[in-house]
Amino acid sequence: MKNIGCNGLRDFRKINIAELVRTDTYRKTILMKISKFARSACPIAAAAALATVPPPTMYDMPVIVPPGMAAVPDDPFGAGCRFHHLLRRMSDTGPLSSEEKTYLPWLSALRTGLRAIGARRIEPEVPLHRLGSVPAGICDLRVAGGPASRGIVEVKVVTELPTTAPRTKDIVQLSAYVALSRRPWRRSSVWGAIAYVSFRDRVVRLFVFEDAASMEKSAERLFAAAA
Picture 1 (spheres, rainbow, N blue to C red):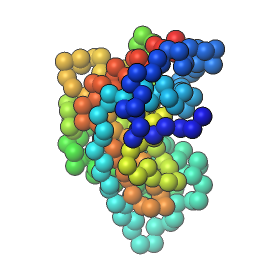
Picture 2: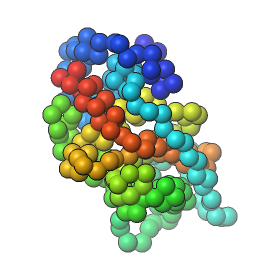
Picture 3: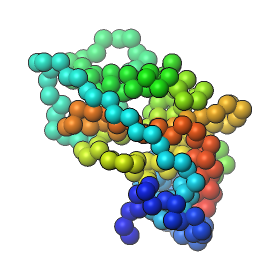
Picture 4: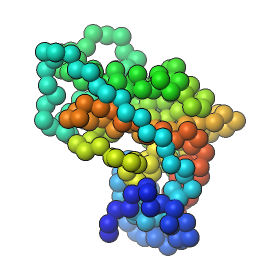
């Protein structure tokens, strides 16, 4: 089945999601981590669940690499793992290794972009407990401040940058984390973002959903249908 991008989401509002995902395969995926569920979710069901989510605003942060700095290895998976390792060290004041410093310009660009939209405090890898049909997970970044009082940011290292909208599976994943994280401060609004990191293009592309309340409802609807 061909994947369906965000630009076509609004054509699927009347689809019965439960009929699409209530199979043995999808009952099993509810036991997986959120990231695995997002990759396994039926594209049409995901598009239907996300149909009411307003389109995000896109920001590009150029990456400035100092002269003489070692090049990032041409190994997308390995580079992605190493970059996420560096993300976990955002709250760590210890010295960086020479390998970690290779990825620092991209981390700095990401941090600059988040600061530019109002982020004040950034917490890496925050565990989020299961809630109802939405399974537990670990978001890449939880942010204080920004377009709303709190934010959830998912970071994806890619070989090709999405041009106009995030990938549907990434919005499903972000929506689930928003649903889990929004509960403790129900009276406060939450925003969400997906940051795509390109080592080849030397840019961090940020898609920001300024009010993620609709994302919470979409996630609950999709995961409940799969239960």
